[in-house]
Image (cartoon, rainbow, N blue to C red; front, side):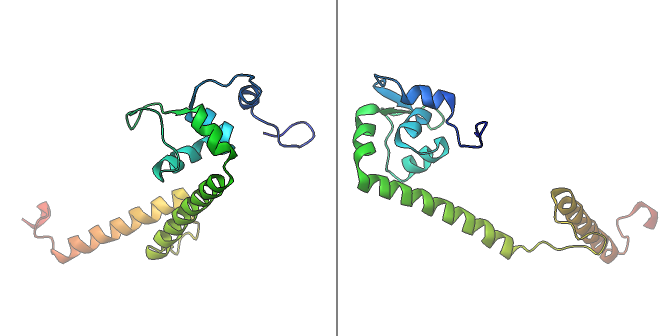
Length: 150
């Protein structure tokens, strides 16, 4: 969020949480992210890579809580923060590489009618390609299955 002068401002809920005098004993993933200085979307990456462990045995799609005592130790551990930052960078590097490799493996074919690469144009090209395939299949069967050939 940007303030009136164009400076980055903090989320009011985050600011209120970080200014608490006594932090609760267990924190949600979002609160843990605020406390550690990460984004809420980065906590699942840290959990998946074994750098953070939720309390108890939460279901896969359930709310996960984290111990404030453990987070305080991690908050002060420079080596852990370095590893966590590197894991997040590596995660996004791999994810972006898969995206560019997938695009390279399946290049977008443009039609003569349009050179646009937007979503609507892409769907149109796919349906055109599908239609041309259906036309090709129908032409190779020589109308044997068509009602007019009987």
